[in-house]
Image 1: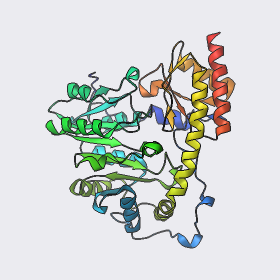
Image 2: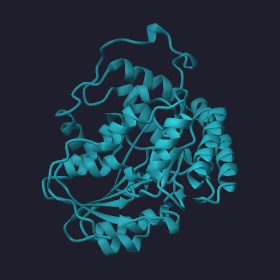
Image 3: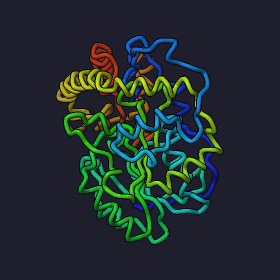
Image 4: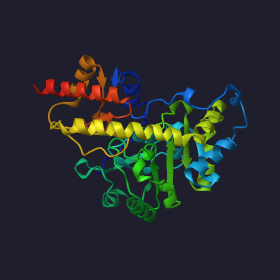
Length: 366
């Protein structure tokens, strides 16, 4: 698969415009991140906060907390304003106009959009639906060239939640190194594979760069606590690059992030309970829908079923206008016969939203 981007500057994200303006519904199954964790459930006092502090190339207590969480040396951690900025910085550290990078297909739209905005020549490698969206190192070997500087993977996969195992990541890294490239792994959903207790790809070798945040799995999006993991020289380069974008972060968010990290075990337990209950609800729904094709949902916050007949776009319009329910059209992931369904809301909301999706599917079939 050799889709090549032109060198035109991409100045906006169609998906983010849709997500911010069109995805809202009473039964919102378009969200991919855990429902917001309430501030009232954190042991926070006003005296714990301050407007400004020593936040230069990282706030030291937050740097230590992130390093401890990730099990890495502190000099390998670059704090960033959410996973989106972390990914932007990681890409920008490698991309100059005309740089070739290799990105999975399908994937999160902003990965491709950001790369093109930075001037990259984007090539793609397939993660095929009929193969469970697994990463095939052989496919990467066929698409990579001596010009490729970066291979980009999401793990868990966005939009399918497929897990990439360590041996596959190591095989990808070996291919990348032979061609003088590195591997960027977006791990923002990885910790939603609770029962597998997956470790970060960063532990597999210095050729890996990793981005993540506290947003999707823990419901802490308001903190904008993201990070890049990179070998120390590259981390230093990314810190300096961030001077062009972030300069000084919001200090109250840094302080609250430290408190959240101290209580992350409790927060994670809430997320795990929610996702395990909701996976059962979703799988029961899926078992009764021969018009949808998908594997059993095992982990992660999203699923990506295929509609066997009919138009997903027509379904989404009907679902929103008549049933006050939203899912993400698969066209935003370059697969228009699929839809991404989030399973992160309250179980009752999920069950009713799926029931309404079923009625919309039945109506379209008639």
